[in-house]
Structure formats: C-alpha cells, structure tokens
Amino acid sequence: VRVALVGGTGNFGPPLARRLKEAGYEVVIGSRDAEKARAVAAELGVEGAENAEAVRGADLVVLTTKADATIETARQLREAIGRTPVLCVGSKLRFSPQGVLPSDDPVSLAERLQEVLDAPVVAGLHSLAAATLDDGQTPDEDVLVCGDDPEAKALVLELAEKLTDGHAIDCGPLAGSRALEAMTALIVNVNKRYRAHAGIRLTDVG
Ligand SMILES: NC(=O)c1ccc[n+]([C@@H]2O[C@H](COP(=O)([O-])OP(=O)(O)OC[C@H]3O[C@@H](n4cnc5c(N)ncnc54)[C@H](OP(=O)(O)O)[C@@H]3O)[C@@H](O)[C@H]2O)c1
Image 1 (cartoon, protein in one colour):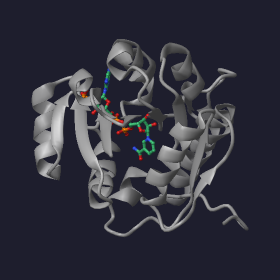
Image 2 (image 1 turned 90 degrees about the vertical axis):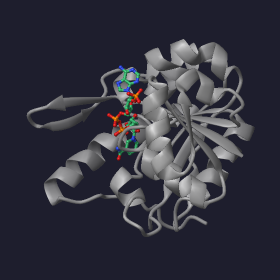
Image 3 (image 1 turned 60 degrees about the vertical axis):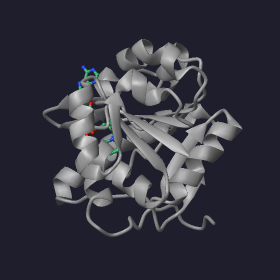
Image 4 (image 1 turned 180 degrees about the horizontal axis):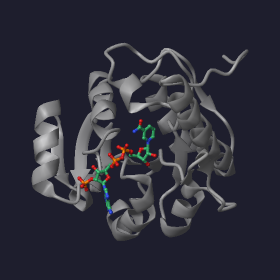
C-alpha cells in the first residue's frame, strides 16, 4: 500500500513515515519543494517528490501540512488526488493567552476538506504526538478515526492499528471529527500544563 504524506517534511510527517515504513507501507514524502522532499525522504529511506507528484499513484493521501494550509493545499491538489482516500490529521485551533481553544467554526477542518475534494475524507490520528511516534517505542494509546466512507475508513483503521499498541477505534461519521479536533485543544493544554505528550485511551473497547 502506497501512502503519500503531503507536506511530510515538518514535525509530524517524518516520524509517521518512519513508522509506516517499518509497518511495510510504501511511503512518499511530499513537499511544495521537490528538493526539500527528496532531502527529508533520503534520511528516512523513502521516496520524496513535489506534492502533486507524490499523490499520483498513492492508495492513501495523508495531509500532514500545517493545519492552516490544509484547505488551500487540498484545493491545489484536488485533481491530482482525484478519488484517492484522504486522511486529515489536522485540527483548527485558536491560540489565546488563556490557552489553546477549539475552533469557533461549527464545522471541522476535515468536513471543510470534504467540501473541496472529490475523494472520501477520513479524520484521525489527532492525538498521536510526533514526539510519541518518534521516541523509539510503539505508542501505548488509542487512535480515534471518523469517516463516512466505509472503505476509506477501513484503510485508515488498518494503518492506525499498525502505529500503536492500543486500539484503532472507529468513532463513527466524519462529523465526529469536530470532537476529535476540539480534543486536540485539550491535549495541547494538558501537554503544556504537565509537560507531557498525552494520548487517549477509551475504556472497555476491543
Ligand atoms: N506535530 C504533531 O505532534 C501532530 C500530531 C497530530 C497531528 N498533527 C497535525 O499534523 C499536521 C502537520 O503538523 P506539523 O506539526 O508537522 O506541522 P508543520 O511542521 O508546521 O508543517 C508541516 C509542513 O506543512 C507545509 N507547509 C507549511 N506552510 C505551508 C503553506 N502555506 N502551504 C502549504 N504547505 C505548507 C511544510 O511543508 P513544505 O514546506 O515542505 O511544503 C511543512 O513542513 C497538522 O495539521 C497538525 O495539526 C500534528
């Protein structure tokens, strides 16, 4: 299975790419800059290409661009992505002196993404920190996934299962991504308050 990480050159892309490669996935790192993609990819032992090139031929596209740039990037890649399933890991957040706040948009980033893409969008992995993926041990937490398209969601759940010692949990329709994204605000506040890389565990599942 070939997975393209659009904007996979930042904090989250490389540790995710490493884990996916270890799990047997074929990974391609995407970037706005082909040279940058190839340099980051070379360190990981995977392929690298400009974003539009990276998504062509992929079985799954993960948008690992910084959250603010996700919708615009998706608009630009709409044709190249076509109907290939897309995983949205980003959250719309607001930053205030009191702490991180959930978005005041009633609709999630993942749902906004679904409005601009022809592909089925799945939301997930929000609570899996880059630092946790990078620390050499398999994360001991659950991975929560929402989506409306059963096949796309199954593909993401299978991938998520391989990233963690916890469960990959089907949390229902894509609209549930509003809760997942809002939860990111909580986790960022917890991480700051307790100097942690907090994850999520649902009890009595699986
Ligand atoms: N960091 C985490 O622990 C974590 C955990 C779970 C989910 N996430 C989510 O994962 C996503 C990536 O997070 P991150 O921390 O890796 O972000 P990041 O390092 O800030 O940015 C990732 C990549 O986004 C691309 N980018 C930046 N500005 C852009 C623009 N204006 N247009 C298009 N692309 C742009 C850059 O790639 P190029 O310059 O190479 O194009 C950059 O390397 C976010 O949506 C975040 O919410 C992060």
